[in-house]
Figure (tube, rainbow, N blue to C red):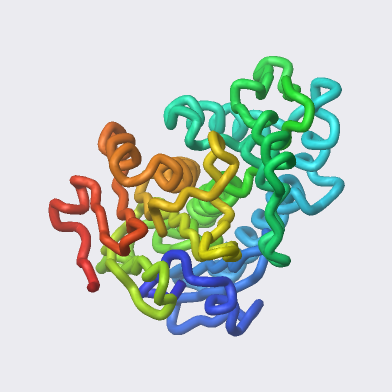
Length: 334
């Protein structure tokens, strides 16, 4: 992302220049780091430089903490422990994880299963770096383990058990939204009123940019240096899911990281979805849901929810806006 012009969905490499350096012009301070396998950026206004830097330190520490708990790549993370043990026994959960899983189940219900963290049962079979996909037999086995209703969550006991052998969960479509929302709470606790926190395609805006809105630009899914729309925003969450983030192509088909839980394959009717909502969990979960549902059903879901808007780029490159944005809050860039 570029600030104050923010490019939602830009690749981590374009964000990480000057990694780890804090820059301040006047009372604006910012920092870029790579955490959770993605580019993390914090930009904020503080009357005192030291206070601003302390707030950024606290946000980055929180990002590392969430990564330690929710990374599927760290064998000692809570998420890895769940995936390792929950098929054979009820696994005890932290309060944070229990609440996240309960929220994920609510979004699965809301979306009719389009959002489903058990898609990892198939998602783990794809290797986007090496360009490998599962064969038909492996895909069938993985699909048989998918199903959010098989998540036996006991909120009172704070435990989770998988009802099916081979089931796995992945919080990749949820953890970053949780992280930016948690970061926003930390910044408010430090007295920060104007800030933006970004984790890959997920951003949380606090207030405005001191008298003018933050400008969030949605990148063109096929021309990474160009934008298709500019959104003037303040005090909200923004999430973009795109088929250009992690993918490979075989025989003219693009296999990307968004998985349709019903098919175990990548949806092809949409190139990107950007969701605006009051909080990062909602925006991130709905960006995945709308991507899977497609333009018509996805926008129907968005229109049914108060305080939520969307911009969808379909497979033909056409833009589709929810009613709130059509009312004048978006500036197309064709």
